[in-house]
Each structure stands twice: as C-alpha cells, then as structure tokens.
Image (cartoon, rainbow, N blue to C red):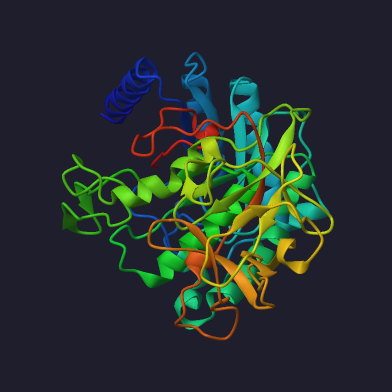
Length: 428
C-alpha cells in the first residue's frame, strides 16, 4: 500500500511540475518538513537533525531521490535543502556535516540545479560563515537564503521608533547574512511577507524598511504567500491567509496597492554585466516608485531620473551641470545650476535608518524630502527621526540606489512569471 501511494504521489508531483513548465513557471523545490503539518515551532520535532521526525539519513535519501526525479525538468532551477532549521539541538558541527553532505548528494544526483542552503534560528543567522565557509567540491551554483518577517523582530516596530528599529535590524542582517554578497555568493531572501489587510502597523513599518533595503541591495526574493486560504490548517477547514496575495476564494487580489508597491522590485535595478554604465536613482519604498526624469514627482522606476551622487553629497543630473536643490519649506524640490555653491544642493542620508534625505533650504531651515497628496516630492520638516514610537516616517523614507539603464519594470498589477531568482512572486 505504501509503495502504491508513494508512486502515485510522485506521479502527481511530476504532473504539477510539467504543467508549470508548460506555463513558463520556474520552480525551486523546498524541503519544508519531515512530518506533514503547519510549520513551525521549536518543539514540532522537525527543527534540526536528530529531532523526533528529522532523521538525517532519511533526509539525505529523500532529497537525493527528489533531485534525481526532477533531473530532466528544465524549469526546476534549484533545490532548497531544508527550511528554517531551529530548536534546542542546533549546533554548528552538525549543521556543517549534514548541509555539506546534502549539498554534495543533490549535486551528484542533479548537477544542473542551484543548491540553496539555509542557516540557523529560522533562517535568520548565517553569521558563522564569515570565518568558516562551507567546503564543497563544486562552485558557481551555491546560493544562501535568509528569511525576514516583521514578527521576526517581535513587536519592535510598534514599540520602538521606526528609524531606530530599521537601522538596528538592518545592521543585524548585515552581520548575519549580507556579508555573503561581499564574499561573492548569491543571497536569496526566500521568505518575507506582510499581513495584507493593511491594519497591522508592525508589518506596515517593517515593510517600508524591507523594501528600501531590498532595493538598495537589488535582492532576489520570494513572497509568502500567493494563497488566499487553506483546505485545512491547524484543525480549521478553509482558514483564510491574511498574508496571501489572493483573497479567500483565490480569484481577486487581496490588496492591489501592495502589488503596486513591490512591482519595481520584480525587476533587477542592476544589470548582470558589471561593466554596464551605472547611475543613481531615488526610490521611495512606501509607494515603490522613483523620482521621475521629467518632473519632481514619483512614478515608475523604469522612467527614473538618472543621477550621480558626488563625494560632496550633491545629486547631479547625469550628463548635465544641474543638481537637486531645496528651495523653501513645503515646496517641490527643484533642479538648479548653483551646484555646490550653497548647502541647499547638498543631500545627506540621516537618521538611524539612513532613509531621510536631508538638506538646508534657502532660508536656512533643515528639511527632508517628503511627498504630498499627489506624489510630488517636496521638502518638509524632518519627522520621526528618533525616540517617537507612534510616529510614521514612511512618507519621508527615500533610498539613493544604484541602477543601470537595463531596469524595465513589469506591469504594476501583474504577477510575474519570471524565475524566482529574478524576483518573481512565489509560495511554498
């Protein structure tokens, strides 16, 4: 009976993968749990090698079979070895042993797939790789993954100042994972997401910080989740998924403004060619839009104003002698020619988040970039810089990011069918 059921399960999986291939959807296979159920907690028996339901030998055999089973499917582009290792058994010696064995076995079974490795503590920590990298027989196909949700930081986003929390968490992520980019490895934000009801302030503030960070680092990512509801979850039939991109019946978008926010991140800001001519653009995380080339308003990042950011902190329109200038409080930012002659043309990223772009206007007032009700970029008093926990700084959060002329944003309300590693929307 087990053999028949197992073979049927394999056939169904192959049918699903084949159908997705016919519809140009690429897949990353993810070993999520050993005992089926809802993931995750420290004591569910699935957290770390040697737990009740997590036999390392069975796990190695399982991922080897899956790698072999899908060897001939071109749309299967990667395998994530294990989701969110966690729990009291966690230790580095065992992590290195089995993650390296698992990676080698998958590579032997299927040399064509990317091999994706997660860290410890619910995939929040890869810091140990700074001094002790993995040792594998292959190269140029290894990817590391991290997860980050608003609840990863507890309720810090609503009990603390958003600028200070954003700066602190980003520094922690840099130490835990972002250093891998400097070591030459791809880093994949393989899970993130928010309550899309729009009423969760903790998630809303986290989201603005994450979008600025993801744009600045041009990260590849996958969103939790596409689904709007579950057949059965944790004893509940038809449970709604408020993190779902789709609504309960899977027929409409749950929150169209959310998809508009993330649409710019569905394309790369930077071309893969390191020799491509680059420039800076000004990105506004809470709208997902960029400063436009024809006006001081926000719009699609595919039409962003191309800038150079000098050592003197002057934002010069690329190829010209013009620069951004703070004129007066509560008025639109403008392009002037007195670049460097006074402080109104010097812009500095201030606050712990490094997302307030501040200058001094013609009247000597300290101002920050902001947006008005029509998405025009104006200068206002800088707000929420520190201490205040109830203040929302998102309208004044901007990022000066690297870009190239190859950035072509998709339609703002379409779900991309690009590979996951190009920033498509995926679910586990």
